[in-house]
Length: 426
Image (tube, rainbow, N blue to C red; front, side, top):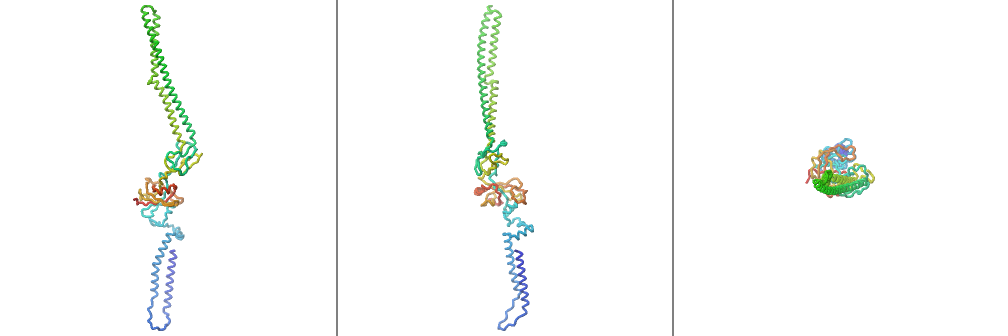
C-alpha cells in the first residue's frame, strides 16, 4: 500500500511538471484579440499554482501513510506478513510493551509478555483446590484386582466413603474369622488353666486335711504308747514303730502344706500359669486387630471430600500405579499459573487476575492467593514444536471468585491464559 501511494505521488509530480512545461511553451504565442475596452488582468504565474498544489499533497500523503499503518497493524494483510517473514522481524519486538501482539500468540509461543504497564501474562491450568488427587489402592494390596466400583464420574463423595472394592476381600475376611477362632481357643485355655488351678488347690487342701487328721491320730497313739512303754507294757520295738508313724504323719502334713501353697492365689506358680494363658490370649487378640486392619486393603476409600473426576480402571483390571480414581475438591476452583522468573517480582498476593480460554464462554476472575517459593521447570506447554520447554518459572495459585469457580467446575486441567494486573491489589 505504501509503495502504491509513493507511485501515485510521483505520478502526480510528473504530471504537474509536464503540464507546466507545456503551458510555458504556449505562453509566448498569443492570438490577437479584439479591443473590448477593458484592462487585461494580470497573469498568474503557473509555477505558483503548481507549488501550492504540491503543498496540499503533503498532509494528504501523511494521512494516507497513517491510515495505511493502522490498517496494516489491525488486518495484517498477506503482503505485510510476507515482508515480516522475509526480513525475520517480529511485530512489537522493538518495544517492551507491544500493543499489536494478540493474547492468543502468547499461548502458542509460551512466552510471558507485559502487554501494558504492570500487567503480566502467563500460561496456566484450571485445577480444583489442592489439585487433583489420584486415589490409589491401599498399601499392601499386592496384585489384587478390582472387584467392584461404587461411584461414577461426577459423583460427590465424602472422606472415608468406599470408592471401590478389591478381590482380596474374601481372603482378608477369612483371616479375621481365623483370628476370632484363635481368640476363642485362647480364652478357653485361660479358663481351663484357672479351673485346673482351682481343682488342684481343692485337692491339695483335702490332702492336707487328711494328713493333719492322720498326724493327729498318730500323735495320740504316740502319747498312749509312751505311757505304756514307761510301765513296760509295750515293747521297745512296738514303741519305735509308733514313733515312726507319728513322724511320718507330721511330714505328710508339711508336704501337703507346701503343695497347697503352690495353688494359693498370688503364688508364683499360679501367677505364671495364668500369665502364660493370658499372654496367649492377648497374642490372639493382636492377630485379630491386625487382620481387621488388613481388611482395609480390600477397600479404596476417599481421602477427602470432593468430586469423582475420572475413573481410570474397570472391574477385573489390576490398578495402575497412577491410581484408579481422580478426585478433586471442585467446591473451590483455582488456577495454577507459571510466571517467568524474570516477571515474578511484579506479582503480589491479592493482585486481581483475569483468566481466558477458548473453551470458556466467559472470562474468569480471581486474585493471587499464593506464590511458590521455588523456581522450577515449565510444565504447561502447547503443541508448538519450536516452543521453549526449558523455561524457568514460579508457580502462582489464583483463587477464583464464587461465580467463576462455578463456571470452571467442569474444566479441570484446561489450559488457560492468565493476565495478572500486577501491583493493583486493593
